Length: 431
Image (cartoon, rainbow, N blue to C red; front, top):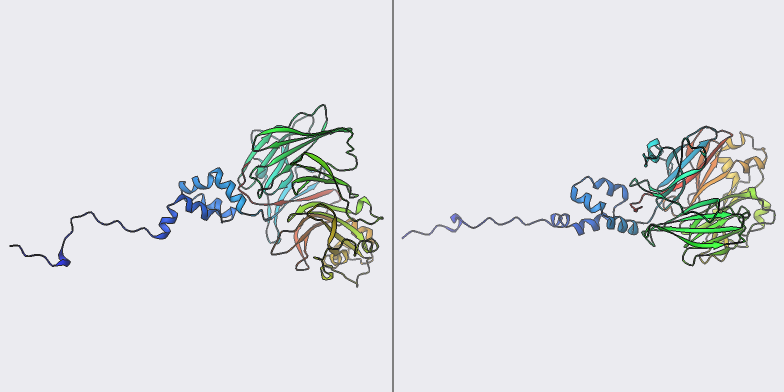
């Protein structure tokens, strides 16, 4: 009889037990779990994680992930894309400036060379929630100033699509407008506005169907009173407004035109008082420069309860007559405008006396003529509402929340120059 072995000496001839997977391994081994985690990460981080493995690259590169990530992540403005162009000196250069002014990056000349098959310089005309509308001009074309190619370009993913514009019914002039609201749809639209004399046509391209549709044809249209170059997308419509505050909009869903109410401008308002028209934080903005007398005409009329007196910066010590940058905002129902913010120009002069060449007695007309609004950013939690101002040699911002100025960028002042700012948003949106 063979004696039995002690229990601790027993040898098992069965297959070894599998090591239990940790919860982390279980999660990372499941594509659905990984995808859900990645949805909550910022765009820059997600793009870096594509390098982890082919599996993660496959997950992130899938169109459905891009659509979901864009929907779940609000289109927060991370910075401004500045274009400072010195007239008669080409090509112009682009710079990326962070909202806080701590980062200024010269954008490489390769930034806009996304289509190497077509030579020529690329011009960025519009940004809309992370997508750029670009036009490429032929370098050796007989009509050098006429754009020959149009693109929708995502600078974050480097994806682009070329647009073939519809032919107008004998209409010579056209304007292009990009429309994109990722909170409503993953697809963007492009409007092509044809007009000649009194005939207006609006064609709409959908990235979902890849086709153009004639949405509006209207005769007896007066295009002289409104600048059709600078349309602004807000609340499901494209809005145009003149420097005198007269405007209309095109409703995308109803495919019709609708008049806009005018801001409560004083009777003495002139075209050179106008400074800016745009959208930010879900609101439409109209910005102008008023004198003290003009400002008195509007206080108490449409003043917003959100704007207490301490939002107005003032300086009684300056000898320069009172002038104010006034921000009007449109109510959501598109029923009327109201005054939301003031900024006393004296505050700008005190912070940047070089604008008057150190002479506080300089004419107020010189000061007002040297101040332009490049952008207004409402949806900025850290800095609060930001007014981006373009002065000779300086791009500055003013925070209505902190009542403080910040220098964003300095450049050599020149008589013949232009500067405009495009809001930059990182997104994985498909084009």
